[in-house]
Image (cartoon, rainbow, N blue to C red; front, side, top):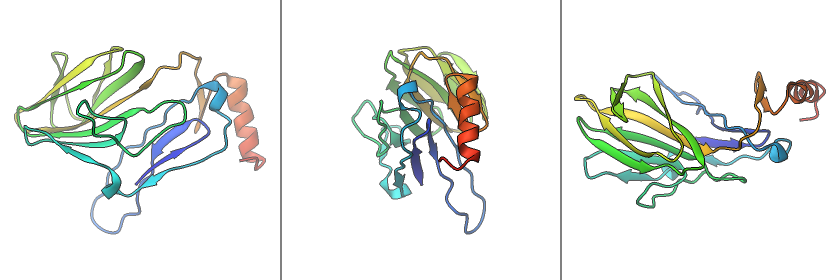
Length: 185
């Protein structure tokens, strides 16, 4: 399931486990200062609502947010801009390409197998921070790979964080904690 929420976050909500192993990835995105105190809201999607693009190499791209170069669009939408959130699986020695807008910051996180990003090997559990405006090309290792491509519009504002709160100043973080403890949200 995927959920977006106000108060400065977008994140995936872990489904309830019924059997076996389960893993997940949670992502928090900072909202512009003018939208940080907006009313909380969320969007929830079953896995079947997340479109899957099939690559010529035999790989797949689960499009959670944003759109691929070929136009497959994810269901998650944000009020200030749509982030790019792709879950990519590649067979052995395959490659994947995706344009990342110049106004976005982003990263690639290797979930399984090794990948090569801009000529640099990235191992499972590691990430590569992208330069703005990259035309990203990722290649998989001889055993295949799974990785996340995550990018969002740079808001170019100061960042202060504490616990679950991401604001622009330490005073705003303290106020958010006070508001939370007093039941204001």
